[in-house]
Length: 82
View 1 (tube, one colour):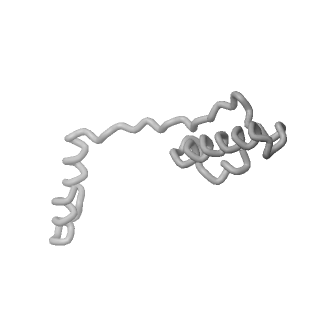
View 2: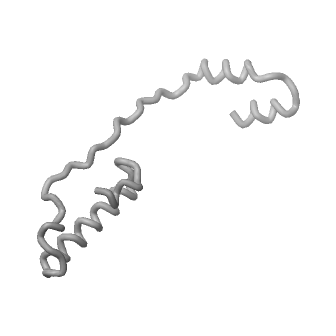
View 3: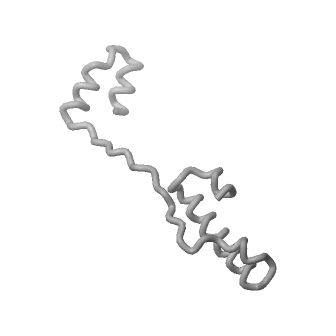
């Protein structure tokens, strides 16, 4: 678990690294290269961080953002981009 601490819980990199690490440790223990104490646990669930629930802006809210931008040529470019 200390090897996996460098990646954020639930990230794809952590999932991949965990899978490869567990596979390697199982292989090494089965072949006798490592003592059985190094075998990864049979069940150790990956605790995921709760997902943030976000809501998209409504059309009226987007128009309100556009109306609240300052006037001017530079701001017109931002208005067009939004």
